Length: 265
Length: 256
Image (cartoon, rainbow over all chains, first blue to last red):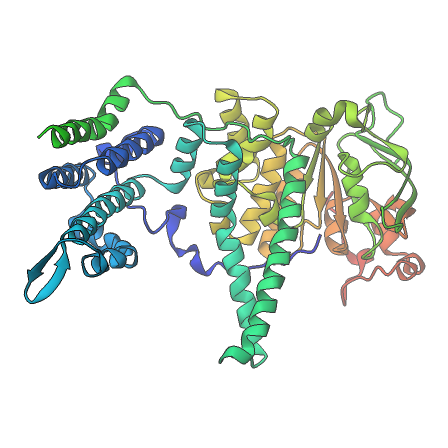
């Protein structure tokens, strides 16, 4: 059992293991059980996606609904908007659509744009933004660990939940190992300057993989030693009352009404 | 140290244990020893002596060689595996391997929960175990944000929570600064379980364990009071055991 412990904890400054996406608080939204929030967010996104793109007003109402959730969760608008930027690379494609799509064309400011493309771009942009905003709100009000408990409660395959929970636990350990390897390389005068050095980096990546794999074996040994037999024991049972479910599902239910109106009008 | 003669079954009894790895490398050639309940014993030996192999036999992770291991009267084998793993608590060398759950509390709860304990009884187990190692204020912290010494202590708590018959520590003092070393020693002294400490930290063995075993080339070559073994230069040299510079075991007055 080779130990490479004795690690300095450079990143340990942030207290309590809170992820950067999480915003600590005691709002009514923070207080809801994680699985109700997960279910609400998932249903809300489903409803948004199934709204016809022509019902532009409906998307406005969705945005207002989300804004009111953010208000109740005391998540400031600036925080939410900054986090939304993650979406940019994904919607860049949408901006191209009016230029490349086929069909009837309109002229705006001397540019020839496809009507179909414009609708397509609007569709992707509106639904994408609402979806990302929902996820950002969920992440801002629910700790990662709680999310895992929620997923477990919602009967996601246990193996997936275990893998995700190990990712959270060992992410820092492996990043730290990577940092130590980089320091060791640089201490011996190595600097990655171009294609010629990719070989060295690839070998480091391979070594990191093998180290992580071996760590996995040692962790498994430790788990078996404490009675692990293939399933994680349930330690924290999360439960939700009827009232909590009603609060959480208010969002997708309101959205559903809007969606149905969108189809009918 | 003839402690085996009383009525209580020995915490650990190893007899005639031999083992070869599938690649043909033979690690153990007939190991015999026995630990009475409540004893603290050090298992000393150079690198490659077979210490880790021996430890993995104690809770049945490795098996298939000859000889038997008995824990509190119960033979180690597939029939009683769950019970054996509850009775033999192994603290591995690297706490990052041992602490795999997102928070300290869940990690300590893992063993008892796997054994089917729930609710208030589980909370009680976790609280007592963390109190015994002085880490009760860190229950909701993630293990990777603790210092190395704190992680080692939590690793001990994860095993104590299972209320083991015998605590097996693999190199407990490695990577610890002197203060953490002393804190861990205080904790180990305060426990009323049988302790088998695998180490090549000889002063630590002398400080904590009245009795020592020396494992070399897969056999127990010496078994006796730690002070006497460490003061035997012939034995020490023959098995690559070296005291730190300036350390004289005869000059140490033992409190234990």
